[in-house]
Image (cartoon, rainbow, N blue to C red; front, side):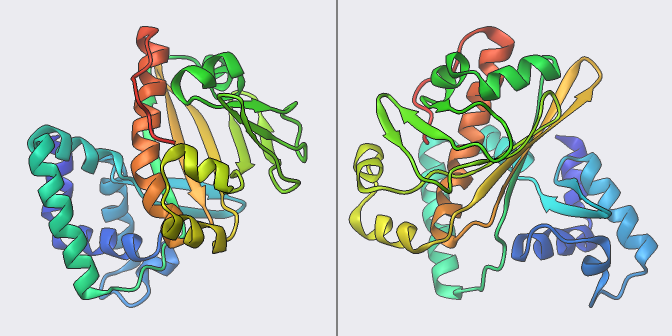
Length: 262
């Protein structure tokens, strides 16, 4: 926790986090634009934020993109904000956001966690229905070849669509696929109201990417959920941390966590 507080103590680093919160997935050049800081200084601040886990970098071709990572912030909230106080804080934050009506250009959610496992075991947990059913409640029907269709089976309720496809599959390294189609049956099953469902149905299809990297006797897992509309971003922002916590628990203890939102 100390390294997180130290990283947040500097106003310039908080400015960089604010810029990523406004638009996630920026290069160093983009983050430097409009700041009265030298490129080298920005680079050093980003390195400290990355060391604290507040920023995650992902390579896309020749570019290095910087994403805001929610994991350390969630850890702080879990430690110092109780269950009932958390709801009051969240309500106040939602009210503040609604009153300010600040534009939200970010179209990606990024989450990083470290799991005591191996890359191969983590890959199996992300792709094998026997695993995914336990911590997610979802089984994927696919051969995991790039371009192959995916059927999402949630307790016998299947979601199919030609645009549900595998985008990348490098065992033990990288997995990417498009997100499922939002259907009335899915919305009813997970308790999504008509108004929220109508907004979701108007948003474009998103995609998720899992980056797997060895980290000593652990594995670093970075989840990047891209091309998000405002409504789905709010849902996955709560869902992914809980889902990754259950995955981590299953791989490290053999027991998944109950009631994971999806």
